[in-house]
Amino acid sequence: MRRRFRCSIISALLLLIAASPAMGQKKLQVKMPHPAILGESLIGARVILGQVTGRCSQEFSDLLRQDLRAHGIPLVAQAEPGITAVVTVSVDISECQALPDQAIIGSGLPAMHISRTAGHFLAVLHVKDFWSGDELAAQTLRADPSKQNESPSTQPEWPAPSDLIVTARLQALGQTRRLYEPWIDTEEVQFMDDKDCNLRAAFDLFKAADYKGLLQVARANTESCNANPKTIAAAWYDLGIAYMVMQNYAGALAAFGKTGKLRDSRMVTEAIAQCQTNKSLAEALARHVVAWEKQTQKDAKPAQPVRTGIIFTNDLVIRLVQGNVAEEDILKMIASEINRFALGDDDLLKLKQAGVPDAIIAAMQKKK
Image (cartoon, rainbow, N blue to C red; front, side):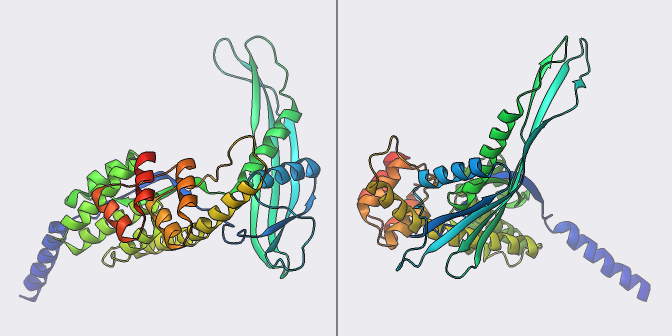
């Protein structure tokens, strides 16, 4: 009797499990925007370009100096009295060279003769507060470009090592820009694609990189998915991811906060941590935008307009307005920068509720 009772319980549990919706999730490679790493630290700061040591030090130092100036970052030779925001940038280069690889004979008929040269650059860039000596950032710079010549008959000449060294330095310089301008990285993101509650449709839009459509569907899913606590939690998680790729970090954090029933809590914790980091950097960047624009206005007429590389969103516009940035400054930035504006009826209502002037909303609609 006891055994029959136990079997009945087990059978009932199995039926419940079978009846409950399967929580599907998939990983996608997605281009995720990130604010500048030193957005906060560079606001109003003066930069001292310190020691650049190792091979290619002079060439890389010249490249870095030119790039900092091109991005409107003021360079000084030494700290001046009364200026509290001063940072030093130094670079330790451990490798800067290019070497020819062994000759290669490829497969096929006729066999292709290949001569390949590989360049290598490895360094660590340090950013420190001048007055306290505290390290604000340390970034590894690594570049390994290669180039090859091919011939179907004889072994061709190897590409010039000097060309590969130049390429390696330029690639490493591009990596330093993550410190002072926004950047896009390819990351693996988990996304819910349950059959229930239209989550599969949201996943398909995410996979197709239709982020505007994704945001609309994800919002609708959170309103219609209320049959199962786990499913609605998954819908809120997907909405959080949608907001995050659109750089609306406040909206993302609010959505992630409603995923309490989601099975994989670590996944949500990691998403929240990344979102909070990006939110704080984006807020600093919003302030940096204004300083950047004012700096370029002071300079002599440049050969071409200097772009900040910022992706303008509704959230960024709201922060600029609420930060008492002049309306004319915001209009200039909207006109010159790329954007991911969302301008549906609900979006326009939120912009007006946030106090965004009609002239700015009209400029957003015109640029879109």
